[in-house]
Amino acid sequence: MSALPEVNMPIVSIVTHGNGRCDGSAGATTRLGRIWAAILLWHQKRQGRRALRELSPAGLKDIGVSQSDAAREVGKSFFWD
Image (tube, rainbow, N blue to C red; front, side, top):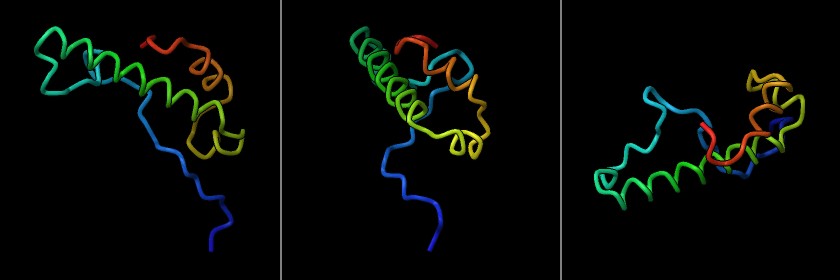
């Protein structure tokens, strides 16, 4: 048995890769595909920032994120890189 509480929320990336995009989907070659990929990326960022906002100071320390870094990330709008 662990002393840590069970976390029942999805873990999503809030960072981008290389060219600033995480879409990588096969449908991103068409205009509609790129729009859909951007919407999905914005949604993932929003979920990630919500999860980050709900972490306690001890939880932030566990993942190696300072409270000021977390506050700066959470304060971004959902479409910001």
